Amino acid sequence: MGTSLSFFGLFTPSSRKSRSSRRRPRRKLDLTPQCEQLEIKIAPATIAPATFAVSGGTLDLVLGTSEKVAIVSNTTSYTLSLGTGQNWSGTDGADVAGNGLQSLTVTSAGITYFSTGIDITDSASSGGDAVTFNNSTTNPYANNFIIALSQSSSGASTPGLSFTGASTFSGTSALTASVNGDVVVNTGASLALNGGALSLMATGTNAPLTVSGNVSNANRPITLQATGDVTVSSGVSVNSGTGALSLAADVQADGTGNDGVGTLSVGAGANLYGASIALRGADVNIASTANVGSATSQPPVSTFVSAGLSNPLGLAVDASGNLYVANTGLNTISKVTPGGAVSTFVSSGLSGPFGLAFDSSGNLYVTNSGNDTISEVTPGGTVSTFVSSGLSDPSALAFDASGNLYIANAWSNTISEVTPGGTVSTFVSSGLGFPFGLAFDASGNLYVSNVDNNTISKVTPNGTVSTFVSSGLSNPRGLAFDASGNLDVANLSAGTVSKVTPGGIVSTLVSGLSEPMGLALDSAATCTSRTTVTTRSAR
Image (cartoon, rainbow, N blue to C red; front, side, top):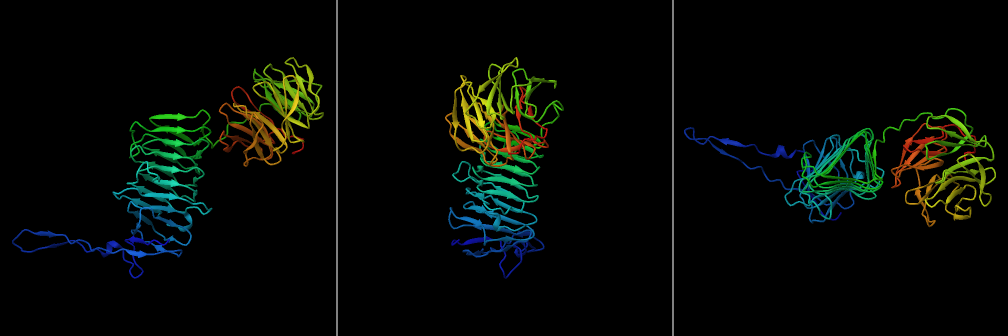
């Protein structure tokens, strides 16, 4: 930090008087008793700035309640970074006033607690001022921030307010910003509050607000507004928990009314969560695969079948909404009507039935883990062998759009493909870890739950394997896609069902289950999960 900084209005070490105490009062001079009084104003004395040159040292600014720090840089590109070794400290407040020329980078490592928070203000006529929060450490901001940049330029190469690191606010710290320019949460960045309200407002002429990194608040309101476009990028989550969530494009600079131009856009796989959600704009574009709803309460869970099953594992739903259950303990298949009536559909001819899947003709296919075969069961209940060899502890089944059957071989860590004519080949030979659940998305990609490493793999139609979910799961088993393209995952060890958006964001859909294993969705997109305790090995 070789460039000198000037701090206007900062008391020097030799004087602790505030600026207001050094001003002389106005005086009225009675020149002649017989004449009109003449008012003469005595201008305040000009106070020269105290200049500090800091290069790697410690700069401690202990501020009183009414004192401000005015930051003036020598060049238009200078950045003041309050980082390690350069500290503000105090017990009252800190106000930062800029001159419209420099950018200010705020890192939590250089700021200790101010009880009344920190105000960052720039009202210079020259414009172009910018503030960046760039906390890439685990040290959270412990202050309320109020940011007012009235002359930042909209559409400039540097946004008026941006977040480029993992910016976390501790306790009840709040963040309120009104910026006459662009507001951006950058890709790879995040903004998280834990009890204080969050309000970001882009107030310039058609100024945009772009959210390309996750934004969250622990059960307090989130308000994101702009006079121009508000964009939530694909795969990004904005989560206010039990607080209200408001996203508004096309508002006037004071946050009311509209100016008729801003578009609210929510990208594919984006997530908007809140106890209440308000969305507005001159135009609103929400991707069909975006998830807009409450993340604070799980859907109602009830017992659908309470008796007549034995170590139920795999599930499948036919075209009429009947549920079929593989009873591994009895080597049978049960049929459950939509009303909950249970009957035996297959009573013999199976060996350790596990995975279930229907083809387009209504035939049911069953993995037999006891003898490494696949059985075909007609709608009338007739059982025959469809695949007699080439498998290794087959678990899950899934059909693609062409009628090919895919089988997860748990012990060999492979996926087999079986044509409608019964020809078996290896579709995936490596990259899996005890594959257990299978499900296809609408684009023909196959998703695989890996028990050994608690991940979900994605396999393209040509067999390319990549990791879709790398964390947040616990002994994942059954998989199923809902109508919005979200993937539901049964977590056996955690007793939960996770929801994974198309963008790979993991959240808990249902908790409080007992070793959930199989998953199936009926025509109403109701998730059906096994809630009985399995006696099968947890592997």
